[in-house]
Structure formats: C-alpha cells, structure tokens
Length: 453
Image 1 (cartoon, helix red, strand yellow):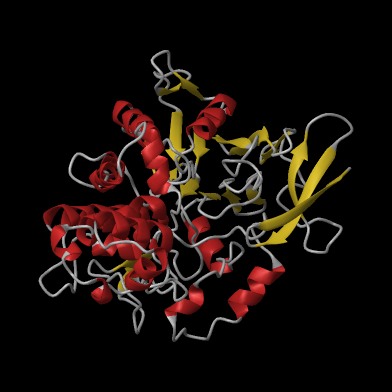
Image 2: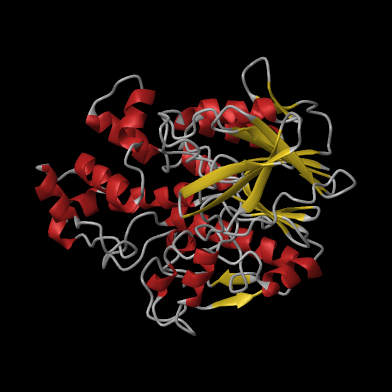
C-alpha cells in the first residue's frame, strides 16, 4: 500500500497542484482532475488531511477537485475533516432570517476567544449597518479565523456584490453545497495499514475517547460525557459514526430551536472546538510548536494545566504530547506505528518525530510569511510506502530536501533531538553533497533554522 497525504490547502490551488506534482503516486489528468498515476492500481491511496478552504481565492475549485476524486475512487480517497471544514456549519443557523432579526446586542461573543469583540462592538467600531453581510464579515474575522475569506470569494466569483458573496458562502453548507458535499464524503479519522490519520492531534486523554452524541458547542462547566473505545479500529469506526450522526442532525434541523438553546449538528461544532471538548479534540488539538513536534516550552505549558482541569479554556494554545506513553501504548496495541496530522503550521517542512511511534505534522501554511500566500516556494510530498515514510519537497528558500524513515534506507538523524541541544531538532536532510541536515527550533508559529553537516 502506498499512501499520499496532503493537508491544510486552505483554498490555495497552486499549492495543491505543487504537492501533486511532487507526489510519486498522484497526478493531474488531461481533463484537470486529481488522479492516481495508475488509476487502476488498488494499492494507491490518497488522504486529504483537512482544512480545504479560506486563505486563498480558490475554495470552490479545491472543493470540486477533492470531492470529484473521492467520488471516482470512494474506497481509496479519504477526506479527513478539519476545523475550517466543520466550523462553517455555523452559517445555517447564525445567518438565518430569524437569527438576523435578533438585535445585535443579543448575539453572544465567541466563548473560545475572550479577546474578540461582540457583534455590537464590531458594528460600532466598523461603522457598519447590521445585516447578513455584516454578520458574516464579523463571523469570519472574529469567530472563525478567516479574515480573508469574504474577499477571496469575491475574487473567485470574478467580482460580485457583497450580497452575492454572502449568498455564495452561505450556500457552501446548504443542501447541494460544495463544502457540505466534502463533509458528507469525509471522515474524522482514517486508518490505513500501520498509519492513522486525523486532522489535529491525539494524546493520552483523547486516544480512544468518543464524545457523547449530545455534546454542546459551549464552554462547559464540567467534562462532557463520552466513552473510551478499547482499540484503534473501534475508535475510528465510532468517531466516523459520530460524524455521520451529527451530519444527519444538521440536515434535519440546521437552525436554532425556539429558545436558541441548541441546533442541528451542534456535536460537530463541538468536535472542532477545544473548549467544548475539554481539550480532547482530535480536530483542533495540535502537536507542532515552532516547527518541532515537541518543545520544552510546550511541555512547560502542559505542566501548568491544573490537575483534573477545572477550566476548559486552559487547554487553549497547549500542544498535545506526541511522546505520551499512553498514546504510544494505545496505538501500538492495535499495530499502529505512525500518526499523520496537520492543523498547526510547522515551518516550511513537515515536523516529524522518529522512533517507536512516528508522528508527522505536515501543515506548511506559514512557510514564508513574506510571500503573498504565506507559503512562497514551499511544497512537500508525504508518502507512506509500505512500512516506510518518504518525505520530500522544496523549502521556502527553493532548496530541495527529503528523507526516509524506516526500512534499510531509514535516516538515523531526522525527527530526533539534535546533538547540539538548545532545543534544536533535525528537521530534514538537504540535497546535494556533502551530506547536510537542517535543524529547527522555535515556538508557536515562529521558528529558526540552521544547517549542519
């Protein structure tokens, strides 16, 4: 089995196509569709890691390519859903005529961001009239982390009025909409051979955890109920059943109830929100910190979490522990040797942890902050090739890099703490001669690198 993985495209069609061109098993067909190099080869699989839209003006094209590929190869294309995918289900209830009739002062600010203004404060500060366009702009900028989405959609439509843009975005998650199609075809987790794929992260608290079907999208006062599955396969099946039930609930009642106390699909909105999940979100949890899978700073922040946890907001900004023995044992007991994720930017090459459990975090969306698209020249190929991981690509500098983990070709330095100490990790191996390695260290979305021989 050979598995190509691309994640966090975020509306960037050129980036998607660059990654496809680097992949040894993917191609673009003569009719400009995503394809396998040999469509008839049953051993070839593709996993999209989530977050299809938002940061560049190609959302509709990216969604069309992904859903078409899935429909043509339903058993071999796996669409893992990210927070940017599931969170848009909010459009239906929050932009409905009944909700728009409510005074702005009655609309609560986001429970997960105490720094965000309320709708009324936003309207006053921006000098905007209340209405669907203004509320959508507020949602995108202050509650969804998508400040460019509105204008990106205008550009993708070839120029459109504010109302036309708002209508187009709202239609994304209406019946027949392109984003709703992606969600309908998607999954929370996929296990292929010895590799498990999710969007965000899994740790000792979330491995095996399945939230209850009535989990609320709120700041809870106590941990929401759920259950723990004993092995990886039953957990994957249960999480994907949770997705299916939440989607059915959304389709049955997409709007708020009379008291505005609940809405259909609320369990899916909770799933992508760390507060609502009491920190146990495999969609919005993360590993990568400053280009590394693990860092001393991330460990210090985890150590500050109160024992037992009395406040779910404390999980914000805390990276999951990829070296947690509970996680390693849970996965190993089911024969899983590798975990592949995205969600949090990891410099201009995937962050990787080598060892008994390999962890790869391949969101490179902040590769080059000075570039218009935030990525610049960076692109990568992540390929699980039997029991071997092959990573290759181009850095933001334009330099080629790549390495293999596992098997006789496996590199003994990449994905490990550097001998130099000081928080440095061996990020990747550079091309050319003599043999050179690139080290990385940092925190959050800031990182630095150096090259050693």
